[in-house]
Length: 163
Image (cartoon, rainbow, N blue to C red; front, side):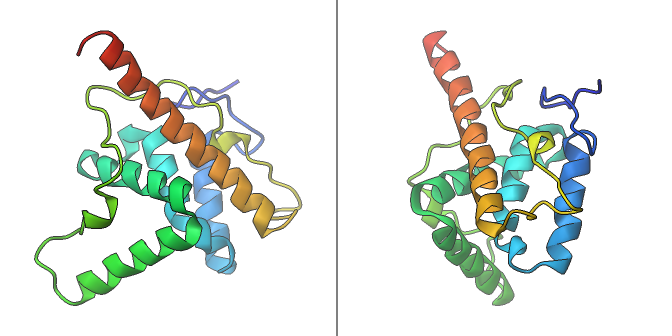
């Protein structure tokens, strides 16, 4: 079987990138599913940092922590704030103030394993939401939790090794 660069085994649709592209495509036709766009993108890029811009990973890690701490509505408010701010020509591209309370991304390497990945998502009847949007949202939350948990384990390992 194929293995994804995040360590996951390929699912019926392929490796995680195949699931990611499938989710993004389905979001275009289903605005309710699109509510989870930000945690999907953040979790995917943090699980596959070779596909991300390194300078954004810290903000994405903090956004996932905000999502897990305060919920989807809080994350959507922060995202809307960023969009509105950028439309008004803010000099800085991103306002980190809403994310300052959250742990920064550990430097020096990414996790090699996550307990929940995109290639583990069920895809039935041609959809990721065949059993409802809330069930889909719970699965995305589980992936977000697994992503933050694995990145935090990198920090814990570094601290125990005195780095």
